[in-house]
Image 1 (tube, rainbow, N blue to C red):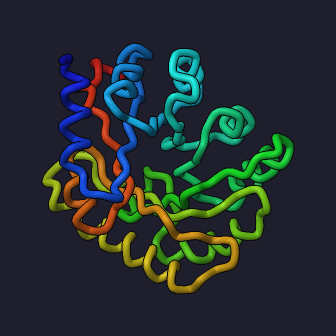
Image 2: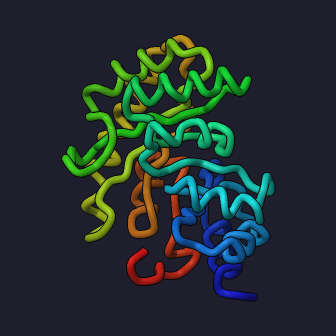
Length: 222
């Protein structure tokens, strides 16, 4: 059994019921991604459209595809064609473009609203206090379905440092869920990466996005 297969099977075995694994495949080779899928990965998360297009030639629909990077406006048309969910909607402008392209393609796109829980100026995402307002705007679009929230939290450092950000995002999730906004199904809370996923699950995440713990460290510069 190769290392990737072993890692995938170990993580899947330890996850509690109801928690979904997204394999973060940025900079990974198509053969590595295929191996993860064959080991049991059902959802692939990609940050870059061009990489996803290349990997898709090998993987196709053997797994679902989630977009987990910052979506540029000029990439929306192709993203709508390729991906099954966009986890990083953070403005009504990008939502409007996704809606338009989905309408043209005869498709409805499930999306998550990205929350900048750490209030970091260099990161994408809507501030926690603005989340409800954005969701109400996005809910007006016919070809988008808001299905929950996503947050990054700190990428490195002590995993415990991420807990307050996950708590704040979960609180926003629960509050918005209680509002029963028409057209909004608060179903998914996507939080936690390799260094913090256990804390994220502790705090209510039901989607985790893991890369290096499955595939090993990325090549230098990636």
